[in-house]
Image (cartoon, rainbow, N blue to C red; front, side):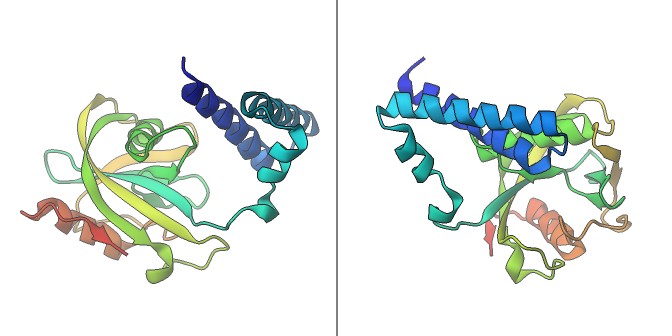
Length: 207
């Protein structure tokens, strides 16, 4: 394992600890995530041969240049041209599968992972369909500035089933879409993505 791969693993540990601190409510769990974050920073300091304070200052949120969050999703059709969707537990509405980009994984890896975790369907990535800036589309307001990467994916196996944090998984025809989770996907976007998959030109939409 070379030094770059080692550093990526340490970054992944740090990202997991910070994600845990965002969602954990149990005091014991928060202490463990804090400890995990401290360990990752110590490892980074050791690998960079820099004082611990320098590493901490480098990663302080208020020192970071603010950048958009990235949401990665997969657009999957079955042999009847029905669209694969997952039912969110947060609002009991439907979306194409996907989620936040993870440090240490490529965008295409995230798309494949999220599809399988949320719907049980195994896929391969075919191509990038679109990059949506949520600010340009009529999503409900939210505190983050978000880019959405949508990949066209091809089914290759698995078993259709809802993921552990989903209420359902199913295929829907473009003419009869379920109630959509508009924080995640809009009907106009689903129809647009469907058109892109049928286009003879493999163009990528952006903005």
